[in-house]
Length: 212
Image (cartoon, rainbow, N blue to C red):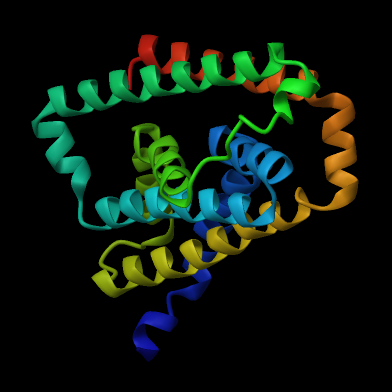
């Protein structure tokens, strides 16, 4: 254990890179923010857990060397890229519908919030269908592992980064479920939903048309 901890100085650049990446606005953070403001803190934290599950999946995959498998079977990455792009476009459509709905419709009794299971699956789907996430994790692990470092260093990088990521996801959920955040959302709801729709659409199209 002491030998592994001796690699902490080399892990720090990778950790800083991860923190910068995870706090930056993206599909996952926008989903947590929007859910927290519209359905409350518990829902925001629930979708955050789902997103964390997707991050955990890619982190473990990167640590186990999934890049080798994806390089060998390139079609698997292409399928994942298409699926992820279509899913983001679906989220763009949902956000666009919410933007066009009036406040009365958004608050109507027949508009049911997503169940816990649906929120978990939505959060997981947002993150796990983004093939670029594994490359981010691969870069982080490669950055933090000097040549010849034992596998336990990769485990330590994943553990530290995931713990921080979970805290950040929950922090966003708590912050944007406050009454002040709700008042801001109610006054800017159409703009927020419109921005989310545009972002998801841009991200989905970019994913579908990009070379990874």
